Length: 209
Image (cartoon, rainbow, N blue to C red; front, side, top):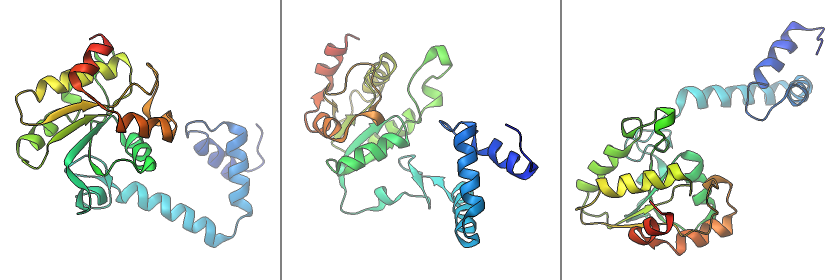
């Protein structure tokens, strides 16, 4: 692309760095902002800046938060006896969208993948272990990880780390096809998988680990 303005060229280059945004889409976005009212553009840029500099991670579950503890963890109407283990923040959003789970979460920040150099020390596994040890309210741990080889390995590892603790460990049912990503499952399938979760022993036997 040839631009008559270096400022527009720079803006297009920055937008095209976003995932799934090509040069043409980036150009449409930039031209839209160029034509937009100054107040709207200022609000857009301010929101992005505040998000980048203001968002932090919950000290309890590692979800995104505006304060030290996220809105889900401080919500007294949530069922504190259930902790749903997810890979990332997008999975929290996907499960919350189903409106079928009212417990708390624990975001691992990834899954075990030795080939990629991701081991237990790179994940929020040990903080989960301490969380369960120090909180007698927790009665059930629900593994809601994507049904991939890495996901199943992570489920197996965590279940071993929590063995001996007075909690029931379950996993979402295989409504999501093997190799699928949790965040891309439709709401009904995901809700059904949560509702029909299985004891971890059944899950491990099915997955073949």
